[in-house]
Length: 489
Image 1 (cartoon, rainbow, N blue to C red):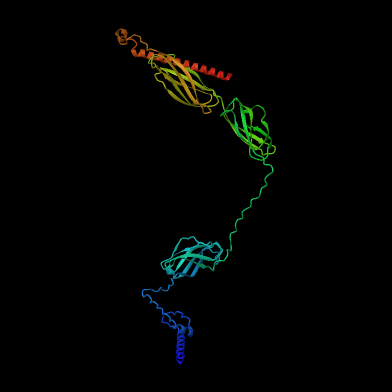
Image 2: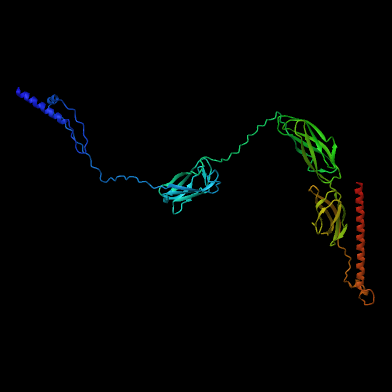
């Protein structure tokens, strides 16, 4: 019994010692601990016959000797504004006011790092050299020239290109400049449109849209019809009692053939047309040219208007061939002459007149002559030579081409014919000795041969003079007849 009690006491003592020992953790240098198991009671230990577990130590790996530690960052030197100078260019006083210019010089610390500078246009300051400003080799300062103060603040900004930090933006506060614009330009007020009251009635305007008189011109002394096309513009009311009147002013030589110079049209709605006509006539003696007539347009409730129109007037053409002298008979090899006389009895000139001869059996066809302009009341003539190409008949004509007063090309033609006979053969050989006068070979006294030749030449000259005189008399007689005819007309 005593042995059993001793054995139990020994077990209890051992359990208490183990419990006290397990209360302390076991640590290794540089190690972390693990939590111990909850202590068992002495009875439980005694019953189980086991002891408390011990903690297992953890081993920490040694550091890698090749790892390089990261160095601490060092501050990069950047240029900083140390001071600035302002020199007014056009200042009116010592204060840098609105719209005044100044040269701004900026001094830096660490200026050796600055390579160039550029002014920033922030609306407050503006300069002529917004491009890059190079910094002198010595460094330290830059100058912005002709900087204009626009008002609204006093912060001047600029960009620096540095060798250490690239492009950086800096600014300075200019104490000499005013914070607000002292003299802002007053904006020009935009005038507000005055509302116009739209009239209750908007009457259209009336005008002459077109007119015609039967062609490109009217001939003096003849009646023609003048047609006027009236037109009204847009509107919202009709024109009442529209009247049209012709006004000749100081114009002479034109008048109405019938009717009245004033025509009542009546009512015309907006955007409508109406045509009216007048019978008119010009005097036969009116000078050729353009006549101007004013058309007066009136209405009861609209605006009056005047429309001028112009009408070209021409004189009737009276250009004609009055005479032709052509040979009736010629012999082969003989040259005849043809003469054509023409006269301009009209009141307008005949321009660019030319004459040409054509025909069959002509040895020299296609002869042409330019005669120019023929004034009114002028007579002239043109001559051609005529030779036959063969025996028989020459059938030809003379063609006169010209431009009338209107510029139109016209022609006049006159035909002629001529009989061509063979060359006369007398059957006499001038070298035949029997045909020679024996007295011509004698040296007996008498008239010499050259004397007879002079006599023959004189007779021929007399005959030519007589023919010319006769022709002139005949021409004068014909002209007198033409003048008589003109007087009769």
